[in-house]
Image (cartoon, rainbow, N blue to C red; front, top):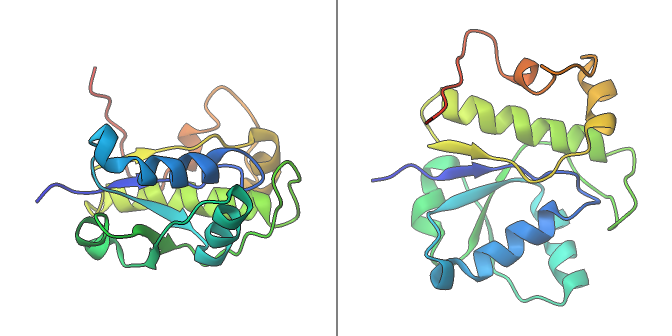
Length: 153
């Protein structure tokens, strides 16, 4: 069985949650591979309500993402609650986005997910929360120690 893609939340106040919800709703039309969203289920449900979209959501472990994908948008909890409103980042935004990135990278490194797919983050919110200065290698520095990232070029 193919491994699911680990989809990061992105900036909670940004377009990332909208992209995830709308992509899942069009999964059959677009023939999308199974993915799971890393984040807070209640936050995603609130965003779907704001968008006026009816979407089934399921809290799952990564191992259940593929079997859940056909009937509900699988959400893997990161332990970080997001409360931001669209266009209004708040004090939860950076930690929620950073947790989803770190969790996704760890899932790929552990062989639980096939790849990381990132929704748009807000670097200047995440950088102070990560404790890592913004440099050309900022995103590379977020991966767990002793892992390598391979490109398919």
